[in-house]
Length: 268
Figure 1 (cartoon, rainbow, N blue to C red):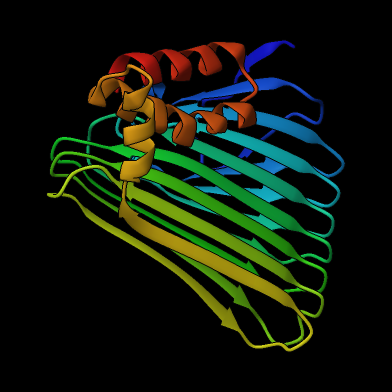
Figure 2 (cartoon, rainbow, N blue to C red):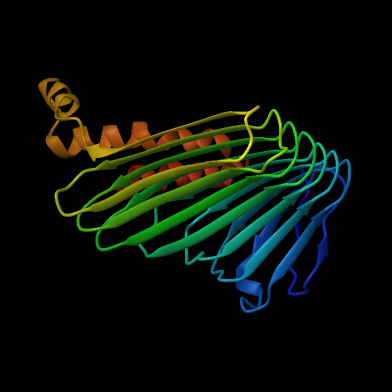
């Protein structure tokens, strides 16, 4: 794939119609300027987002188009990101946050079109005195819309981690399908965790489900691994790797995959 930098401080950027590997490098962008990206009709676009960013970002995904967005939270990304999907449009957003820092990230996806679909997958590690909040919202505003939300987190030391998810199904949005999974494991006594999935449904002919869990690491798992000769720290590291490393499968760029793997191996 060709690599093409589409960084732009303009309010609107027209994205290529072809399948291209694109990077948004926010070190070159005025973070105070709202950004808007149009994914044109009948296109397939992959974007990776990283760097310091506090801009509000909007993605308008037109008919029959697909956007894959990989977000590596390696620095200060505290944005409000919004998606607006037309008929038969699809987004697949995946985020990996292993950096020790505060985070306040908000994502909203409006499923405006018939058969539009949105997915969000997140793996997050909070440590030290981090305070991290992820607020993700899907709005089903037409028939046959689909949303999938999966949040997995580990909280250590004295950090706090909060996953808030809301799937709203508007009246008349028949055959909508909304699914949420939220899981947080607390590794230490001093952490604060919150898993808050919400279903707001105003239509009967739908499928909707959510599941949430938050709690301490399973001591039986720790004991089993230690009985095989591992130290407690090594056992905890293996559990964290098993919990967070599947996010790599949602990333496309090999360099980013390797960076996540290295960070997991080095930073836990």
